Image 1 (cartoon, rainbow, N blue to C red):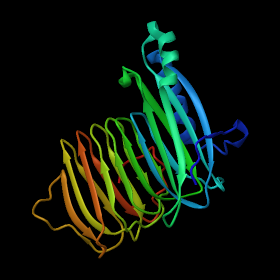
Image 2 (spheres, one colour; image 1 turned 120 degrees about the vertical axis):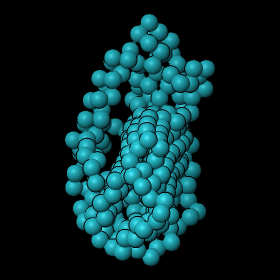
Image 3 (spheres, rainbow, N blue to C red; image 1 turned 180 degrees about the horizontal axis):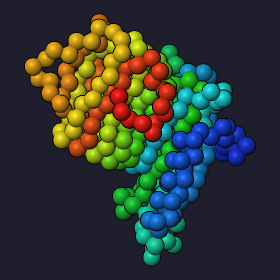
Image 4 (cartoon, rainbow, N blue to C red; image 1 turned 90 degrees about the vertical axis):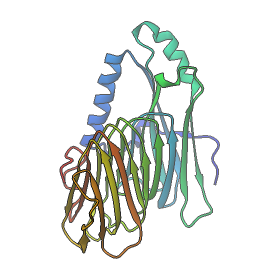
Amino acid sequence: MTLAALAAWGAGCSGNSSVERSLDRTHASISASFDGAVTEERNYVLPVDGIVDLDLQTFGGDVVIRSGQDTKGEARMMVTVVARHGSDRKEEATASLTDISVKAEIRRGGDVPTLVMRCETSHDEAWLHRTNIDIEVPELRRVKVRTRSGKVHVFENRGACSVETTDGEIHVFTPWAISEDITLVNRGAEIVFRAFNGTCGTFDVDCVNGRVLTRIEAGDWRIIDRRNDQDTLHARLGTCSNRIMMRNVDAPVVISIVKDPMEYGSIFSSP
């Protein structure tokens, strides 16, 4: 089903906000005020049936994706569009917000629906624009995110995850055992991958000017490889054939396969 128009998501449908979500919003608001930024909040909802995949591309900004306990039959998207032209260009910044477009649709045809989201800007100074996106769906399977810069947090995905960004941490935390491909590529901020015991695959991890830290609590963990050192990891966990590939520059990669990967939330990144 293709939806050309997005319906507004009212304040009464916002659900329970987590501590982390509240902190994120407060930080973004304070940051915008100091930067002399102009912001506009756009809230949307689309109907979905149970578990979905997500495919998101944006020109820059933070992305948070959650599998929500109280989100049934719909995908909720809160998008804060931002223009940072400086305090002496606020009128121009306000006018430029109309150059930022947000499009989303539910595409069917596979074994589960896919929420496809695209954010674009037509402004001549595109680097002054950002889209900070918070998405909540009932159940999340596979995830693909591309953003030019900004953090990407993914919570409770059940399958493959591919994320590319720069200058913002990548956190992928899931209480499920993952046996599909994982690709996380970053520069300038940490990558943290935490998943449930039973996760398996071939690990291919490289950092430049960073470290690889691991905590594997269960499973057949084979790390003997002459290429391994403090910033490189080639290893196999279990007998799965999927690839778990991570690349980073100037920041660490942290991998935890544990019995309670959601225990500490996203604030703590030690393995």
